[in-house]
Amino acid sequence: MRSLSRSEHAGRIAEQPSFKALVRQRNRFVIGMTVFSLVFYLLLPLLAGYAREFMATPVWGNINIAYLFAFAQFVVGGVLAALYVRRAAQFDQTVARLKEEL
Image 1 (cartoon, rainbow, N blue to C red):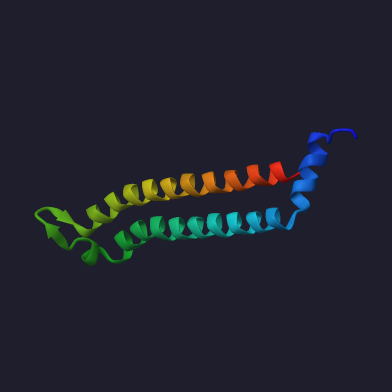
Image 2 (cartoon, rainbow, N blue to C red):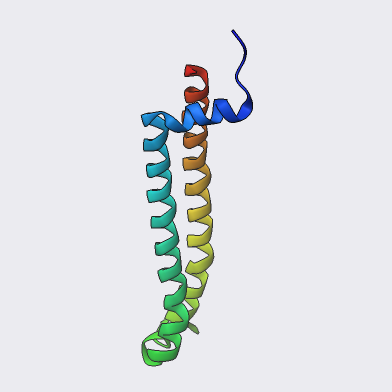
């Protein structure tokens, strides 16, 4: 029996229902994170432009809501990156299992 070429191997994996489910999960995760991050990141300039009094509300000394929101952008970016790395590792493990099944 001849061994499969790389494209034949990939085609067999892509046909498996478990791989299709994995692609759906990945797409749902990535699209959800993308929508969340875009909304979160666009809120800062929108609020800074249209809710100036709210954003200028002092929280602690000279620190106002706008500064906290801007700092939160960095924190959320790091958290989203960490979540993606963790989830991508899970996806990679699932793909490795699918390869072994062939």
